[in-house]
Image (cartoon, rainbow, N blue to C red; front, side, top):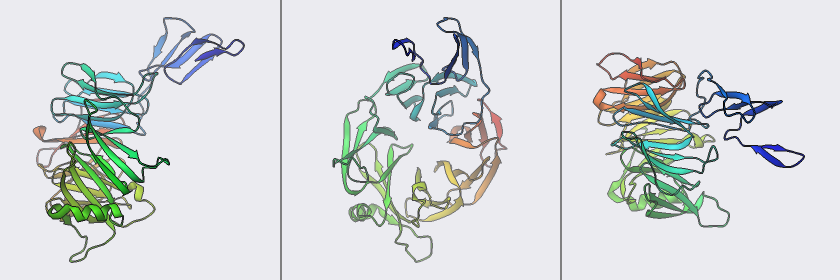
Length: 375
């Protein structure tokens, strides 16, 4: 707001933070990321676009399952692209989570921004119709196709222990299931197949209790023959709508000060565990077998194709055979890979880079990577 300090009167308001005055000449950021200039109070402002620079960070991004649409967000604004026509169809306020269902409906959590409250929205990109979903709460996060809340049971408000995990329907907000964690709270990640991935340090009471109740659904893995490393993670794959345990796997992972960098990604019948030393290991869910390892982090996977996509250096994308861990293809891109998805129907991997370019990488045996679609 512009306020006269002598009277306290507000004369103008701005949706975005960046603005300046020189006399009565105004310059301000506009919603497209450019600059608007003109006389203060004028209805006609000159618009200047700014060159697109590399995205230094990404809040959330997703490709639709058929590769038709792409949605991504920085901290300031989000974009939706039609990749078939290479045209941007929407430029909006930022979201913190996004996914597409099989009907090309986009489900996104829009943060409070540009003087608008936070909201959960479903956008049908075939018709352009946007529908508000469950009521937005800042402490409720979209994971897979549900909303997840960690409800502390003590006045301290800590989510490290004594927490109830609450899972709600994304469309209605109706509670689907809950689970209490008297000890350490697991980290929760989403997956593409209506599953949630929960993982906890093996040494914690939470992992010990859950492993006892997993029964035949629990498998163990090891990085050395006939040897089990007691330090590691318990990974649980549960149905997002019922909380039913599908599979649990114990994997070795050394502790250390960099534990916050640990992550687990589920790709159908495989999980990829990223360790504290920028090392990633592929495990087969059915029997816990360690099938391969690589440096860097995974950015996409498809168990039907049997491929894992990863990146380690600034501009590279590497494809690995999930069953053997062998490298099958390496491609150099123009910038950091920010998001990726395998599109089996097109026999391709789509990769969004920090330059806001989309690359189409043909899968092994079908050609070479080519720059395509959106920029």
